[in-house]
Length: 164
Image (cartoon, rainbow, N blue to C red; front, side, top):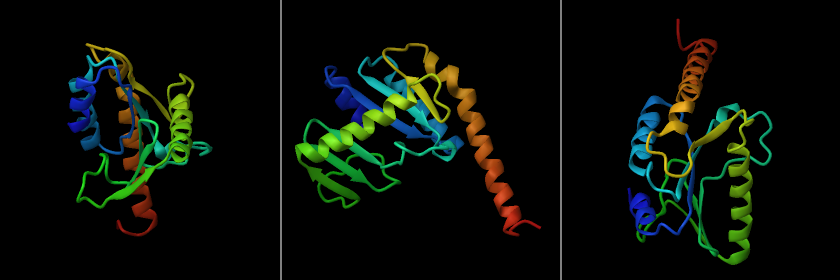
C-alpha cells in the first residue's frame, strides 16, 4: 500500500514491479493490487513464473528494488517492500555504480517479460487500464501455472513416499 500511495502522489515517477504468483492467495493479492492501480499511468506490473525458466540467463532472480540513481535494496525473498529504519530484512546499497548494475539487470529481465513471445512471463498491467484487460487476458495462463505447480508438488510427495 505504501508504494501505491507514493506512485499516486508522484505521477512523473515510473514504477515497475515484477511478481511471481505461486498460489491462489498471491493471485488474489495481485487482483487486489491491479484493481487499486489500474488507472495509474506510471504503475506497471509484469508476471514471472520462476519455475518455468528453461535458460535462466539473464533471469537469475534477485529480490531487489532499484530507487532513483544511487540506491538499491536487496531484500529477503519473502519481503516485497523497502525496509524502513529499525527493520533488518535486507541489504541497503548506495552508489551509482551498484545502482547502474542492478538497473541494467532489472531492465533486461523486464524487457524479456514484456516480449509477447516470452514463455515464462508477461506484462499484466501497462498504462491506464480501466478494465484490467492485460491481466484478464493472461489470468488463465497464470492459473494454469499455479495448477501445474500444485500437480508437481503432489507428484514430488508421491515420489518421496509422503503419500501412501
